[in-house]
Image 1 (cartoon, helix red, strand yellow):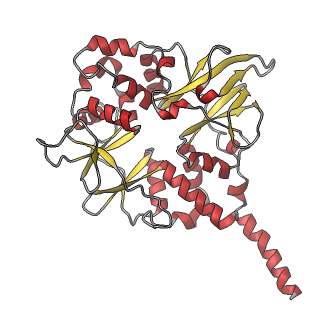
Image 2 (cartoon, rainbow, N blue to C red):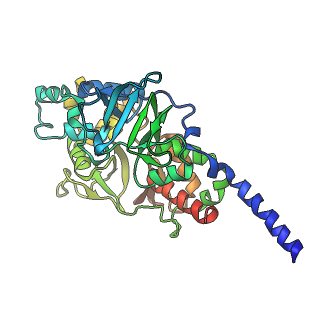
Length: 371
């Protein structure tokens, strides 16, 4: 009996060591190669901000303001301070995403042929459009010492990005922070986390599961889209109303009777394209007004022909029988934030988002190794 007990006791650490890497990794291990934070001042115009997003190939930027004059998004106090003296230099008052910018552009009065009106909208200070969409109503930070498992919990709840302080001081040392002071920050995103998870050998078992596995619940089967006859401005308005960062473009079932200005149920519809909030990032501000009135597929073709977008025809899709690993590899290699699930005829069955992937991986890992 004693020999058996010794064998079992000796076996326990070996199983623990096999999975120690992911368990013991921290957020600071994910930001080693991350560049300095891309940000805009609160006085930057909307046009300036779009140019910053395009130049740096990012989809969101924090907005910095002088300290002491603003209340941060969600009541946060995220400050940048001098490393030597500790004197506060700036206060990050919110995050602006491409969806915020789309929501502003799609506001009252845009979509007609009034170039002057759009020009006026492009000149507003970026601080005035913070909070147009839910995501920018709060700022999130993660301590560098936060475990990867805790980081997965944050990103599995639909939070797309968080600021990570470098040489920072905070009241809490683990998890999500609301008060933070640091000499500089890095931005950590869901995509950064998934790239890391995709390389972890201990996750091979979960990566082999089919996305249609009912225990995983990886697929969101409610999918709203727009028809191929919808105009860009109407698509933007639909995305603003539903707080969607992207929509599938489906073939119109009836060009005459179908309402192309509204979202449609995409289930069992033929997908012919994807429109994302980031597509507008590559559109020159000076040419934006007439492009807003194009049909959405014509707009994507224009971007593709001008080299501002990859082929509009190629959709990032998977099948219900695809493995989770295949789907994760698709988003990492194609740098997309969702994969449409289609049947053998190319008809929409659902979608798997980055949030879905992180949630599924985290729950499996907790069940298998941390209970």
